Image 1 (cartoon, rainbow, N blue to C red):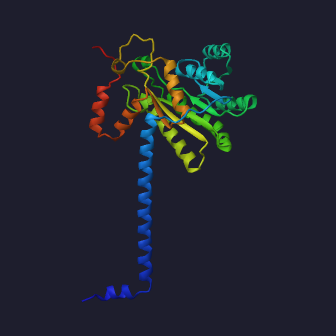
Image 2: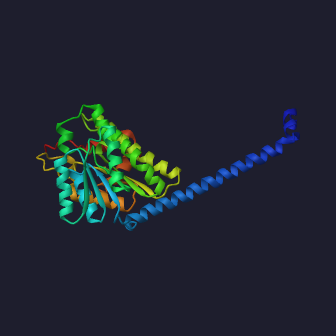
Image 3: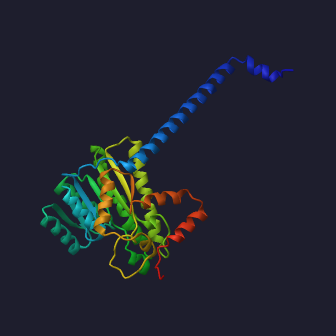
Amino acid sequence: MVSFEFLRKVLNPVFPCNMLLRGYSLCVLMVDVVWVLVNATYAVIKAVHEVFKPPPMKSVDNEKAMVIGSGRGIGRDLAIQLSYLGATVICVDINEINNSKTVAYIKRKGGDAFMYTCDITKKENVDDLAQKVKTELGFVSMLFYCCGIPSPRSLLMAPNEDIHGTLDLTLTSYFWLIDNFLPEMKARNHGHIVALTSVAGLSYIKDQMPLCVAQFAVQGLAESLMEDLRINKINGVHVTLTHIYPFIVEDNSEFNLKISSYFGTITPAKAASSVLEGVLRNYPETSVPKHFLFLGHVLRILPRKATVLVRDLLDTGVDFA
């Protein structure tokens, strides 16, 4: 027999409305799922297509590009190559002598560069720098943050135990720079922020916990910036996160390292060129060398034990073999 409770529900005038609402919700869910699957498939196909036919490079002619850490290494080569492409380069470094050499070289080659000496680990210095640059040069449309990328020698020989110093240089100062320059980029819907991190942001390096934490945090900052721009529908400001494998970049060091023994090395100039290629194509994430980006993605989805085995295989320690 049909229960009284069931009859009461069927005869309730609200029951048909509830059924219709549930049916409508189910239909909306199914449409949303199909929409996500179709767009996800398209995104995968597009990504595969771009491997064989990359998007065209944008022009940086007449852009004002600020390079933090332009006195040496990849930062120096980034500043030089940006000047070759027609950008006005704003060179910022704590080492005035090295920075002046970078600026002098750019000017000697016919480029346009300006030098600023600044200790970015202090907020008041960053605020003063930003105000001075805006007053003297105007809108800064590109920001390259090259601080905190360690050399192989420093990773192996000089562990940094100053937690506050490491975080201030690698992460906190980046927040201060973004606070000063991103709002105008958003207002103009034009700009590019480039974050460089090392392999320490992908895998733990022995005796370098503060550095690893800071590098992981830079990745989180870059991804948060991407989401902020997406949610606010600002499509003219781009963020590029670049993973630098310091052991691949030539360091004039006597150390023989496993990872570079496996894959060879490249010069800082070639590393900077690879970084710029990703930036000019508006890639959200790149790596130096390029093929290591895929490896990083694979490590994220593998089980923990499998990830540990791969990391042991590519151990970045000294190779005594």
